[in-house]
Structures are given as structure tokens and as C-alpha cells.
Length: 134
Image 1 (cartoon, rainbow, N blue to C red):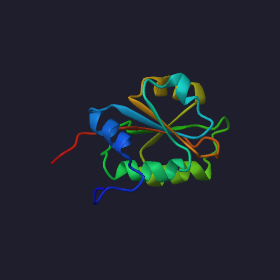
Image 2: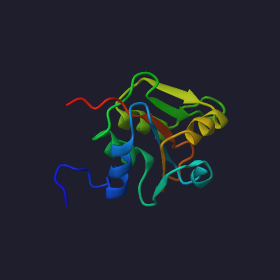
Image 3: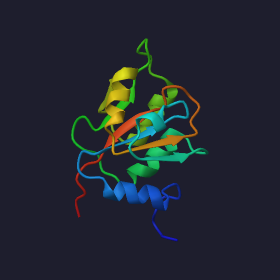
Image 4: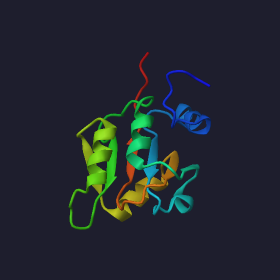
């Protein structure tokens, strides 16, 4: 047991986050996302929402410079409540929206894809790790 670590941050997730380098990406994806097809490394958190897991990850991972955060755009450009929650959990308004296929292309190059139990559509985010300053 560790103190000061968000309870959603499991040992395997912390290991991957620690191993990530500057500008490496993590995808936190909803339950509909084709994680196993795209991922070189993957974890599953079936009882967690994407905003909750993103908020936990942000307690230990600083953001990279632009673009640090990508969200999957809806076909009509509408911003959904889950996307507002993801933006808030990321702690930045500097968010880029990618269409679904472009999002998949970027996700395929991510260091890690974490599939959650999020059932709301378009509840997907790509976060790029910044430099950890001591």
C-alpha cells in the first residue's frame, strides 16, 4: 500500500506511466473502443469511467506542450457532456478534436491504451506525457 497515490492508479498502470517518456501518449478509452486491435500495450478498468481515470492519471502525469490532449470528435461537431468532463479532468482547455479515424490512427501509435467501462459514446481521450520536473 502506498500513501498519496490515487486509488485508481494500480501497480501495472503506474509502471506503464513511469516507463512512458516525454511526448509518449496514453489513450483512455470507452468500452466501445477497439483497444485490443490497436494497442501494443493495454490495460482494462471495467468499472471506471474515462473522466475518473483521466483525473487519476493527471495526479501523476504532467501534460506535454501542444497538442497535449486529443478528444474524439462527434460527426456533427457537437460537444457531449462526457467530453466536457474529460476536458475538466485533463485540467486544460487546450484540447484538439480529431475525427474518429484520425483518432484511431493516433491511438495506434500510443504507448498504452487503457479501456474503461465508460459506456457513453465518444468518451475517449489521448494524453501526452510532459517532462517531469523535480
